[in-house]
Image 1: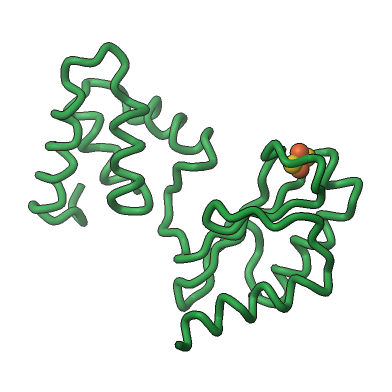
Image 2: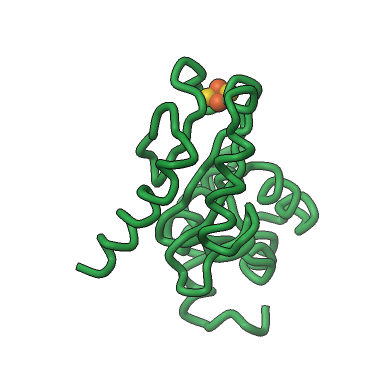
Length: 161
Ligand code: FES
């Protein structure tokens, strides 16, 4: 709690208050916090725990179980590479390795400039166009290793404009 500014604590408390009358408010609270701040660190989970009466361990369990919640800040562009079975047999491991090589980060990490995060995903429901990559919700079909450099370059160029 010590690192959280009073203003931020108030904001988290007000998000908790939005769902005070819900039976199971936790997912809604965490989802709003994730949208607002981009991640849900431990000190924020402690405030949620105080407000809801739920143990921090339970909140931590939820945050770490669902891939759309994050304990650490994510990049501006979240590169999700599907490692589900259909994508995996079509070589998605090579695709994620190529993103890692180019950006010099492992899956789950964010580049130092805060631009890119690489996430390994389970099936995203696009098996017919495997291997699939999703970047901030935009799905890239049948991605080849050769395309990976171009995809990264396109996003970098967008930033340079
Ligand atoms: S396994 Fe990748 S989209 Fe289904």
